[in-house]
Length: 204
Length: 247
Image (tube, rainbow over all chains, first blue to last red):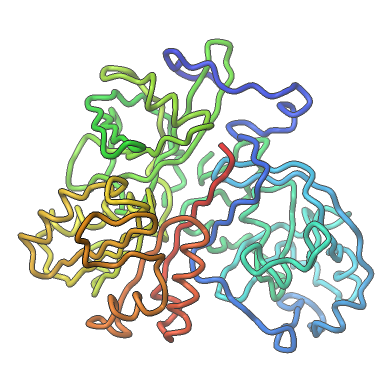
């Protein structure tokens, strides 16, 4: 993307193997910044559940204990936040959305999902971008229980989209016919959010 | 927000004002200025001669009533890539690419009503100042308070303006707290913001307060959790967090 040359700006260069992993406009962080719009929910595990509903033949709900019995995978993924930071090689343990989808029959019209969370947060993701290992519901980060500030007890992780799509404090996926905008998407952020296309804001 | 793209535009730096040792305010004249909602931010993009680019977000400090220009107040992060450039290299007359305004949740406008409680830590005060400047520009009488945590008195951004506003506006009251060192004879708060301090400051507003919290993650977490404990409805608590991000 062309830009006005900033007088006297050279920039901080990274080795090519790192630079090539940073989407346009992003910078590397080694810590794990926290961003959210309101207070951090603290839902007790015995009150927690995960539900798949909306355009499904029969909704399904897991308790925390049942969710723990689902097969897990470890993931090492790069994550990019629309606020410009990218963190490489983050390590998670979670349940792939493919496994969750085996438990319900999504109606053919249910082409989009709305992830919904404690605290009222929502974000929309096309179903076809959550299958085939592209998305998971994580409850461990770096080998430890996921902290509430980072979305614990469980958060969605969709690493190929900006991190606002990776809903913290997730409680379910609601399948829907139209690609309805979620919380940030209604506030001017991009309906899709691919960091490599720099889909930050609506109209990008 | 409309589906039209937010386009990059070249803002011209028309003034640079040191606020504290670590912060400066940059006034940018924008060819395609549009009114922001107080609390929104702009993206800044820098480009090196070989095409390398990087971006950062900075909150708007000025009120939308000031047409044609915006102020961005920027804290200099010692090992940063962008803020040292803005502080050490950029001069009046330079052009900086920006796009915005961005964000639609951490915003407050007079029409939203009050009472308004603003809680800031360090440079987290910047979007809160935009709200206060907007409130003043509208001559609003909505009760407002700010609780502002800084390391020392020298680190307080906009101190003179906050004190002047308090002197001229009976409905506004600032509260400062210092976490490292207080000035001699200081009778106010001198500790991190805690539940006791919050309950004292929020008291006249009670459960109706609309609260905006911006600062480092630890401060925002502590404040937001305490407010929830005090049974303030969560939809009245809006947060914007920034932590040390290494750059």
